[in-house]
Image (cartoon, rainbow, N blue to C red; front, side, top):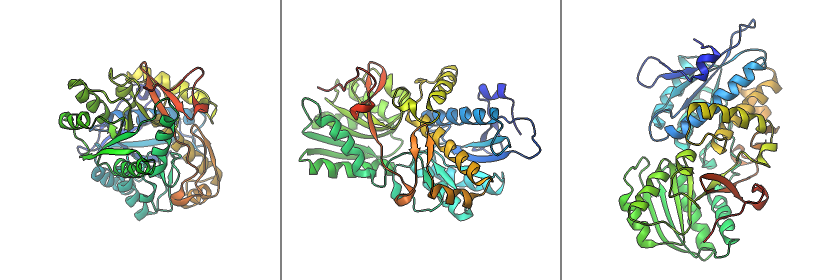
Length: 405
């Protein structure tokens, strides 16, 4: 079943069979003599990752509307069956099996989040399906030869990501000398925190605390108190989604704010508008300013996404890394199908292994270990209610600088 473009713009959902089967069928053009190309995907539309899932969903809508307006993929309309995995990896595994066996989709697109991606990847591998994914934080967890990562993390982000963070702070007037790691047990976050601790120790920084908490934690009162007691020069937080704002609020309630604070994968909208977030830093691979907007299709993507995001009432209605990574994943899917001239998982995967694709994230290639390409991670900062890229300096908008004590 498909919906008209007007209904899509209202982002209408229909309840399918079962509690997990909330699905979105994106709009199609008139029949062009062949059936639609159907792509199956799950996203966390509910649960603790829903704030990020809504960003990815909107990016999917923008891409599919755009390609269908251009005549579809391989001359056929593109239709997406989008299911809610409720932020649960076990649900993702079940739903990807359903997409292949019951819904009989032609292609798959990866879900959001490392755990869900690993679950979906197992299903894709069992059925020999291509899986392009936008947000796996731990490349070594993805040995499957037909999976392709969108984020330019490189093969070893576990140390490299914290190197970027500490390089940025080392260039300020007073580089931090002590650090505390507080991280979710979400797989990629925990591994990145462990790698970050290695980097800090090699730089002769004093690690005052390494604290792990369960993913989905909502009460950060006790954690905030321990951070205050440690009082590090730099707080390294492996927060996922809304955990960042919950920790910020918990520290504010005890009248404490770290001198410097870094958050790994926070929900961008709720974080940037939090009154306690000014000066906070996070990783980025795309923001809606130059030189990012010179990437392939980026300027148009920014305009379309921003318009939709404002109409949808998103708390941060601007294109950034989460939205851009999802859109880039679909650009890669389109490029592979167009290049081989057919919907064929193995042929598309083989083409991607030996070719590059110009995306909104820049040129992506997959020749490295775990199908990774070169790393290109940057640092952004909350400045007066806006995200601003601050490192490397060449990616800063005009007249911007890094806020530091």
